[in-house]
Length: 203
Image (tube, rainbow, N blue to C red; front, top):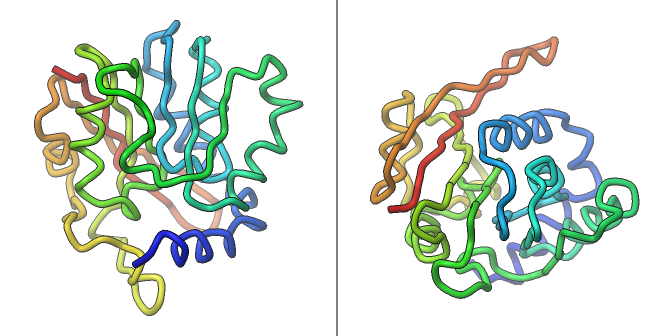
């Protein structure tokens, strides 16, 4: 699957992406337990920027948010005058794995609602970019609920087994320390939606 076809697919979802409040809820929950004052936060596969904007609550010096889809990044950046008047977020169109930063320079890596499009290769890159003691926070869908089909399934890497329990979700962060995982659920009125939230520390 080429980067161009991936970008076109996600560009097609950009217009309505913000209509789903679950994405914002996941991003807020990922950021909430992280320590304040990081120098550099990376938002991997930022989409329309929910996690990047949530990260501003940590009072970071800088946030770098990357996504392969130009329309997604454009919608994210359009919110900046209201949500990031200080201009701490840098928006960039490009592949999110590998992230375009030097080794061991990031204090925090965030990946909200996107791991199922990145695959297992993301974890090696996150170990590369995080400084020792840096924090990782990602969400991952449940294998019991996530059953991609049709054209959508073509964009889901085959190298990642989706967890069905918190222990399995935590095990995805192989090579990290102090790994914790919990189920995050939101009642949307017509159904309960849930993902696993995983937090870990780079060795």
